[in-house]
Image 1: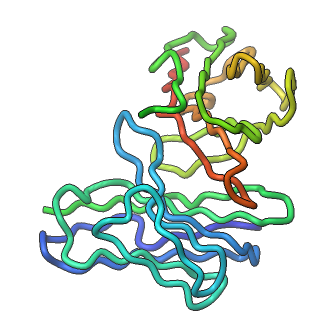
Image 2 (image 1 turned 90 degrees about the vertical axis):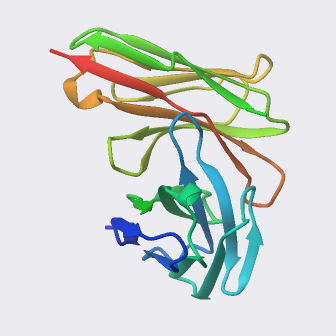
Image 3 (image 1 turned 60 degrees about the vertical axis):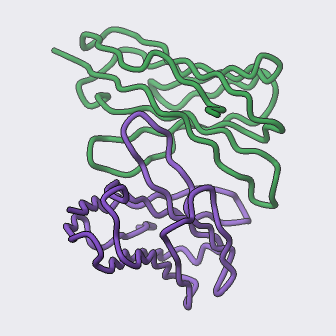
Length: 112
Length: 114
């Protein structure tokens, strides 16, 4: 079953702590994305990765960084989390071949 | 600036009724448009893809139309079921990159009651 897996599903962190969100996919998709979803807003693109070590900033990259050392794995890192980074984070992947998009189930992050 | 506007923001219908969700966008250039379903606490699941001017698609009880001239799409759900309760998100893909950039609407929250 082709899927995107996000870990953890829920996370509570204190302001100033570091946060690591993990995302994996088993479809060998070249492109992977990190989005955040806030109430009343559409998903906003944080970072996009076109392949291993080929990452580009999205619309709201400030306060985030990413790592992609293997095609199937894409991490989102928050160095010194802030309360305004409380959100639901979604990872997605897509293939250049058929441009189909697959989303993970999301990580709900609360920064207190 | 919001480039994808969805209406209504929320909608309550009785099981068995039909409903129509609207999507207007200003994304240019527009490659194709997708509708996704998002169950509460879950990720987005693709329902349909519309590519060409005046495209119409059907996926079971879901059908969609696209008018590229008017930059408008509709999603029709017929004979709604309780499991149709979800947020429906319109996504417009532009031609900016080889893969296309996704522009998301805020979604329409559909609630189906018995």
